[in-house]
Length: 358
Ligand code: NAD
Image (cartoon, rainbow, N blue to C red):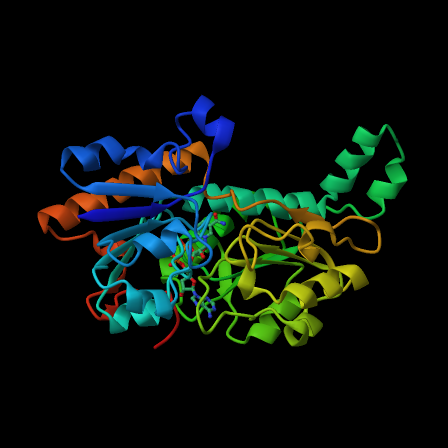
């Protein structure tokens, strides 16, 4: 059968570092294995437009492997052209680049390697919160420039201790963020999620659920976004909601770029309504060179902690999602039961409750 993988090019780095498994050069480390089983394995980064390898090969591929870091956008149109497609595997976590409703309609299964990079992302969230609150980036830039003016940095640097931090989504990543924040003695850790945490889990991190989103954001000094992108979260953080944020709050989004309205967030940072925005996810990836999130600054010339999409693709994470991808393929080839936690779309239906209430 044909297995198509859309991955990012690793270039020189991937040739030097074989643990960069999620690249086209290293093909998740599964190429020789797939070929030994007699399968055709097509790996490419070319994903946009009718002449891309993605669109050329999707018409007869049976398995599609994609990664959120360089998303091959499987639209309903493409699903309809993909006559042989039976299984989509997300090498990582987050399958919003697949039209999941179209996958349901066409009985295409969608699986993720659940949990594979949740610690990687949670660590990145904690780092991003700290770098915003402590005004780290402008301080480092000052040092590189050869300048030294402590007051210019200190005038907008704070401690995390005593602040209220809230997570939108308290699933695997959101919960791990709360766990990691516990020793910082925040004033409160709160969450917004339609799925309540089990009582013991909630007690263990001393968190409180807030049911109304406006009410929730109005209580937070720091908001971190940790829910999937779906119909109910696209554009969730928009101009209207930003008005309910505390003036000067910080926002961290490592979930999906399109959960935040690009221009509304940029305007809020520029005006100082948000003191900063950080994260690694963009509404389109790769982000265009002139994307406003690359350069937007708060009125004190800081407040930007944006990086390319890499929080969940550390070398440790790559080992886990490469192994997980192989294991999903093994189950598929051998017709054995997939691990339940990995199934986003089963045959003709959503198996997860995390992609919206339906
Ligand atoms: P998860 O399924 O364990 O948890 C998601 C949580 O979000 C669930 O508790 C769900 O109920 C909640 N949720 C869904 N819709 C919501 C809404 N409208 N409002 C509030 N909460 C809502 O998933 P996870 O492993 O924690 O991952 C979460 C997301 O993080 C992924 O879907 C992906 O988009 C993103 N992610 C990013 C990276 C990265 O590298 N930046 C890596 C992994 C995952």
